[in-house]
Image (cartoon, rainbow, N blue to C red; front, side):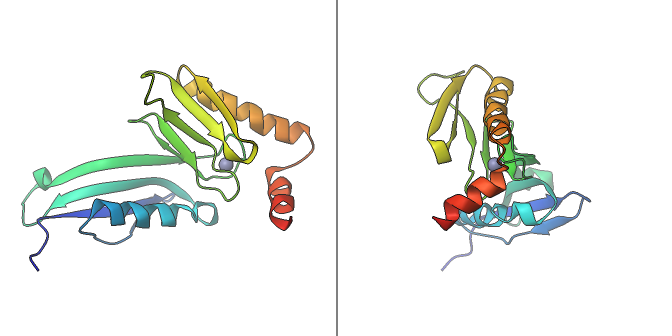
Length: 161
Ligand SMILES: [Zn+2]
């Protein structure tokens, strides 16, 4: 078995600036899997960003490094937990909070149009930009609050059924 010529390195950064390395992997697929699994624990930690970086092995200097993706952690517009991961380069976002998973993604069919959704009620909608998409999700969060239910109680009762 030959050593890989490039490696995939996922990491997260805490609110106080501390970086946590999640390992070094020879395939992009595995690196993504490890990163996604870790991000599901977002609500237990104070994280502000995550990165997936490719390093060319044995190459000196910064040319050896390519940032594949960077995501920033925000409060989720729907469940209000700090579990909403936003990728500004691809106009996509996804809540990793349990039983929420609100998402935003640029349409693959109509470029420039943003799709958004909230799986618990199968809510799907389109928006013209990222801000509008986030305000649509905010409306769902406001409806939950207006109904006198915090997302947590909604989710707990859903889970108990
Ligand atoms: Zn959420």
